[in-house]
Structure formats: structure tokens, C-alpha cells
Image (cartoon, rainbow, N blue to C red; front, side, top):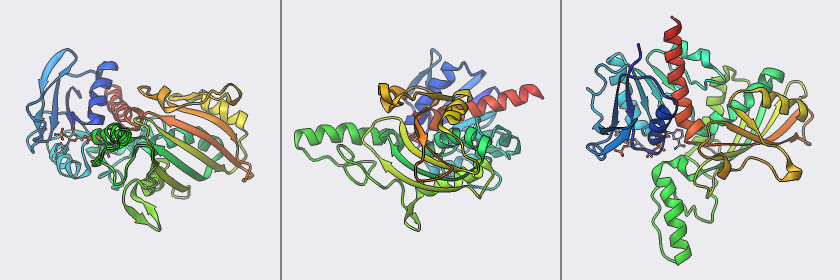
Length: 337
Ligand SMILES: NC(=O)c1ccc[n+]([C@@H]2O[C@H](COP(=O)([O-])OP(=O)(O)OC[C@H]3O[C@@H](n4cnc5c(N)ncnc54)[C@H](OP(=O)(O)O)[C@@H]3O)[C@@H](O)[C@H]2O)c1
């Protein structure tokens, strides 16, 4: 039985949500421990009405643990996952470190749940901007095979963790008071601004965040022929990433058919009434687990093209919800044996 859990990075932006989701979804467990760096070790948190002390992550942290859900920076994930696997624990990892490794399934339960069967101890959850896009792509891909995607993202500051949110709120207060503010997460002022760079310079003028969207999409669909052209932009919104997504399919899919396909898909909510001013917006999608879609219309520049607007809570479906759904898949697959 998978009944002993560890939450690694439990004090971070994603870790907090993982705790909340495990409570909300009544995830079954016998024991649970919360791990973080030395900085937070010793702090107390409440989970399901009980008080727990955060422990420092060490090589011995995983003795007797069945499932560890990790949301730490890449360097910490690179180090702790092998400790956990050695102790016989399955790791569900949110960081970017393991996602593209050959033996590591990269899973979005609405898209490729079967991939968890191939794990060798580590299962990765994709980058937040990839996750909502592939959930939206899946019904269209199944119906008409997507050949090409052009995506522009409008990514919230919480995507850069707790300090990203601080840079927006405290930075905005400083700008309004005419005071200086030293950014912690971003290389430029984010308040009252847009930053057309997320991640480092990576390949042919694309950033690391953009190349994650290319490679992770191809890995999740198991299809390297899907072409992805991303532009990732940080915007002064605290939570929920938004994306304009243009897809070119092998056969034409009309906006009406696309709307029907989206409406039939678990995990997608359609809000699409331009005349009434109804479409998904970050303020309305925060704290929700679904991927929200609106502005569905034909791409006037491309024969088999369709374009739409997509919003999702990056801390929920983009991270914590996806990881907890993977843990639920593991529990269900074990119950089925
Ligand atoms: N934010 C998003 O929307 C999002 C979406 C998808 C994936 N992710 C990925 O999820 C991971 C966490 O992101 P976040 O936004 O939650 O970041 P965060 O708010 O900065 O939280 C990081 C967490 O990792 C812990 N940590 C840092 N270094 C550690 C170490 N050496 N050993 C043990 N624990 C350590 C921190 O503990 P302390 O309290 O001790 O510092 C904290 O609990 C990142 O890899 C990120 O790329 C984030």
C-alpha cells in the first residue's frame, strides 16, 4: 500500500498548495512528513487538523516512505530523488530536473496517464505553461492531429515561487510611493511592466522556458513531429497563467466542433461568449483545478487553423493538482492489481 507520504519543499508556493489539495481531496495516508531546507526546518504547520514540524531534507528522510511529492528547485530535486528511490520510494517531481530524462515518464493525467506504468522510481510533472496547453491540445489532437502550435504566454508572478509574488506586490507599492525596490525573483521591474523573457537564453533566440514547452509537449504526446513555436512573457498578474494558442491540424476543425470537444473533456471548462464579455480571466480562475478556454475562433491566416485563449491556475493544474492527480493514479493502479 502507498500509505506513507513525504512532501518535499512543503513550505514553498507549490508545496503549500499540495498540502491544501491533499486535504481537499481526502488523499488516503497513514503517515505524512513535511520536508524543506535547513532554513524552514523546525517551523510548524497544520495538516488535517494536526500540527507537524517541518524537517530538514537529508539522505535518510525517505526510510519507510512510499510516495514523495517534490516541489523544490532543480538542484535539490537532482539530489534528493535518488536518495528516495534508493529507499524504495516513488518520487513525483515538480522541478525541471528530471522531466526530459529517458527513464522518467512526464505525465499529465488527462493526456498520457498510461505513461506512469513505465516509471523506474521517478515520475515528473511538466512545466506549468506546458501542462495547461497540452490539456487543451489533447481533444483537438485526438480529433484532427495537431501539426503545429504557436503559443504566447502571459505568465503570473507566482510561477516564480513565493518571491515572485513579493516582487509584484512590494514592487508595485514601491513604484506608487516613488521608492526603490530590489527585485528578488525577476531581472526587471515586474510591476506596471511586461518581461518578454522567462528563463535563460537557450537555443536560437528561444529561452529555457520556451524550449521546455517545445520538448515537453513532444514527450507527453510521444510525437516529435508536433512543431511548437512559443513566446513566454511574465506579466504583472499574481496568479494564473494565460495563453493564446493557435493550432494547425491535419483536418479542419471548426470552432463549433472545437467547442464541443472542449466541453466534453474532463478538466476543461469553456467560457466563451464574446458578445456578453465572457471569457476566462486570471482573477476568476485562481484556486480552481480546471483549464479554462474561451475566444475559440478560426485562425484567419491558416486553412486548418484554430485559435483560442486558455487560462489556468499555475500553482494548481500547472503544478500541485497535476502532481496530486499523479499520486491518485498510482494509488488507483495499485488498488487495481
Ligand atoms: N510556481 C509554479 O507555478 C510552478 C509550476 C510548476 C512547477 N514549479 C516548480 O516547482 C518547484 C518549486 O516551485 P515553487 O514555486 O513552489 O518555489 P518556492 O516557493 O521557492 O519553494 C521552494 C521550496 O523548496 C524548498 N527548498 C529549496 N531548496 C531546498 C533544498 N536545498 N533542500 C530542501 N528543500 C529546499 C524550499 O524550502 P525553504 O522554505 O526551506 O526554503 C521551499 O519549500 C520548482 O522546481 C518550480 O520550477 C513551479
